[in-house]
Length: 112
Image 1 (cartoon, rainbow, N blue to C red):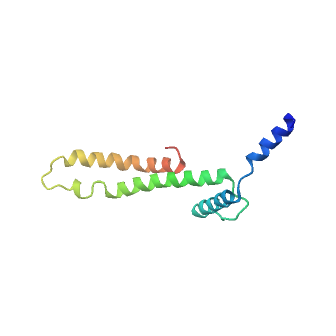
Image 2: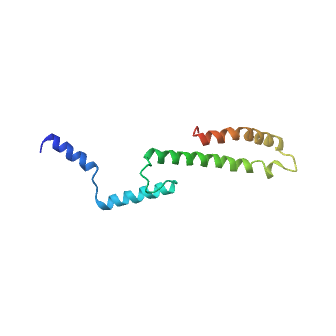
Image 3: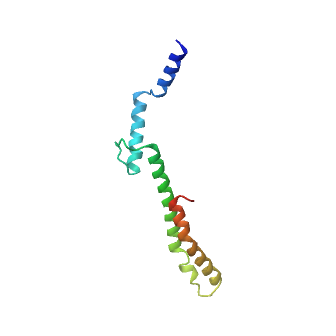
């Protein structure tokens, strides 16, 4: 076998797989596409589309986590009857609330 034929055979082998393995990969591809909101059988979905959707979901989950935290921060604990550490705590809540919107926006844009 000549060198060119060996190279061609090697190249073709890269794209060859048993039928069961091909079926498994197709099933995985369809499941991932569907889970990410794409048409499972669509021909117009590239790997970068999948990666971008995963990154967007990751960024959104960070932002939602901060939003949920900000909804609960300072609720019962800032209203202490004995006044202990209330002022310092309230100030930390104010600072956190001031910065939260920027942090959430940065999360959604993928800056964090």
